[in-house]
Image (tube, rainbow, N blue to C red; front, top):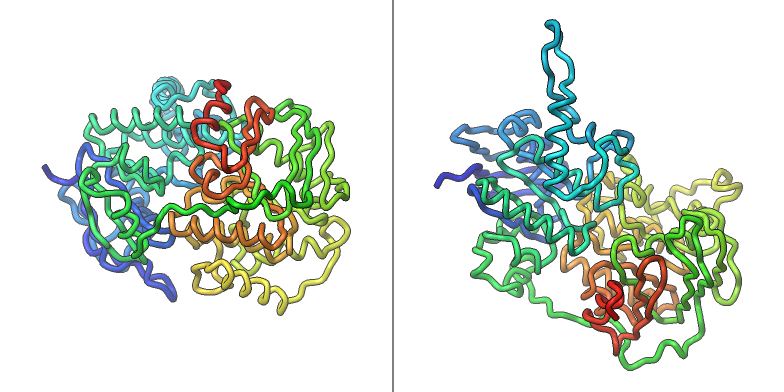
Length: 506
């Protein structure tokens, strides 16, 4: 059987860095080919070359017997390649229907004039939405969808084009377990239709569930390709990072931190939309407090209310016994709070700023006056902040003047952490802090969070990965339907108890 696509000897050089060095990859009909590697390994760069966003410096691409030195985005689309980016490319201001057909509106002749064929659009859109499990009217604006629904619309958008090769970059990062199962069922159906799937993920359990072959990249070089059923997770991790990583607990199992002074406290936090009600918890010095629950259970909604990103109708927040009066994210920053948001592209980084500017943004705001308008810029201090965090967080970049949008997802996340650390923030809310981040970088972030807690900083952590919460947190509060239903300490917490509590079975 001939491959749907072959990439041979692909090399990509950016100014100052060789992102890819002689990479070869082939995709067979009816297979899920996992692309694995740490952030910065070159996975996204390779896929951007396949989708025509980047042109390779060297190498060739063979599709259906036709050889290309490089592809344009139109070439890629015409050859049946579709890519679903980790950072969603849906347009919030357009409807679901309009998003599915952006740049490829079907037309029909009427009185000799080409007009948009809305009937065909609606029929195809309805079929694709049913296929991916979105149950919304076609005219719903995408800005009104949840993150998981936006992800599903992105997948439907790729299917509408009847692509032969579908690239999925971390497609389950915003999906619940049920939605992930639905996606996997869809992928199996696409396999049965002889589609080729390139699947990028850092979730090792997913690789075993859905993959046929796996190719590992490291630092822009090819490490190897293996059949998924013939390789262990430990072997894949070693291929990725060049060393063995064992499961580690990052907490303090022998210390009862609830006997330490209370650093941060929330009392009766309630939003007008009812998405969180009477939420109360205490965070002790040296402690990492985790928040578990299903998507939409109220975890993020509570933190948005605490941080001033969404108004609350009642509730109080205290830092070291002093009540904080937070009316906006700016006032939260001024009073020592920070929030690493789930969606880094929309609310974490500023795309047209470089690393230095992104890191210095929050410390400048904290020092500013008049709502952020008043204050002075200090170029030397800006460089100090950026260089310190670059070294502290091991940010892989050509320098602090590199544009943040050109970094890998994991390094963008480190820049976001850096801006809060540079501002000497006293309590940091981490919402899905390792979303889309490789296993090696995850370990670094866990160690950093524990270091912050040990230094007296407040750490609140939302995560949908139960193994992550269990390995990092000292206590775990479980949300269900807008309320905290149970708080477990590390000794008594288990995946089974958390799942049962979050679903109402416990």
